[in-house]
Structures are given as structure tokens and as C-alpha cells.
Image (cartoon, rainbow, N blue to C red; front, side, top):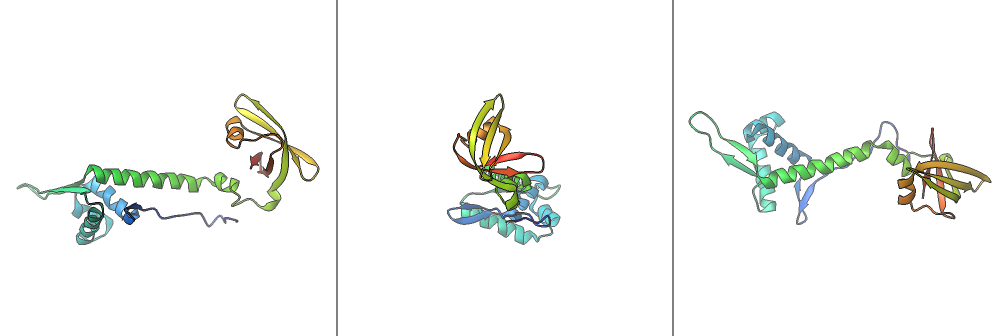
Length: 185
């Protein structure tokens, strides 16, 4: 598969509870804004949504969870009340953002996608058999006998060699990058 520079992987995230969707991107934005504004009406205004929509959205989440995600309080003589996230609301938002940040980082790592073969053309991949594994310090030197009678040598981290569990005699692919040779198994 080839990923064009104009295209990139993407996905939608939502948190479910008992098989029902509870929080997606829009809900996370609402919770994040409530955390900042401490007000449902200011949140709605800031996000360009109606108060009624935001309130209904929050109620639906709370219905699905069976617990409140926000707590509201009335204002005194000087003004309006406010809202803040409960511990559950903060927990939901934190979990959503953790997954979102992880996936954003993963999708931005084009080297990861290249290694998976999503951007590597067939001419960059050479199958072969491991002839030698030499681990020194933080690196490992892997000597590969290619199917075309050629041997290439890749310098990879010792950790990567151990993660791949590379042993002499293993069938591997030498993946040729612009500046280096890496090992795929």
C-alpha cells in the first residue's frame, strides 16, 4: 500500500460503556471547555453550540454511565452559577486525550508506517537469511545472505534485535532506506 503525501491515516475515537458510545471528539471538546470555562453557557457559546444541545449531550452521557460527569452550582446575588467536571468527568476526558495523543503520535510517525510496508516499494525489500548476529553494547550487527547472491549488513539497536528475536538461519527482509538498512521479520 502506498500513502501519498496528501493522504494520511486517520481514525475516530470514542469511549464506550456497556457497548454504548459515551464520549467522542465533540463530547471531549465540551468537557475540555467546561473544565476551562466552568460554565455550560460559556462553553456552548465558545463552541458555537446551543446551551440546550450541550446540556442534552451531557445528560445523555450521564444516563449511559449512571453517574454524573459534571456538577452544577447556582450563583449568588452577584451573578450566575457554574459547572465543573466530577472526578468521573475528568477521568473520561483524561482517558480520551491519552488515546488521542497516542494515536496522533503514532499516525505522525511515518517511519513506523514505512516499516509496516505502507510506503515501501517492492524494490526496497530484499529477502534473505541471517548469517551472523553480533551484539555489542547498544547495537547489534546482522549479516544477511540475500536471495540474489549478495550479503548486506544492517546495524540496528540491540533492543530491536532482541525484540525481533533474530537468530542465525531466520528468514528476514532487508528493508533499504535512503540512509540505512533496517531489518524486518
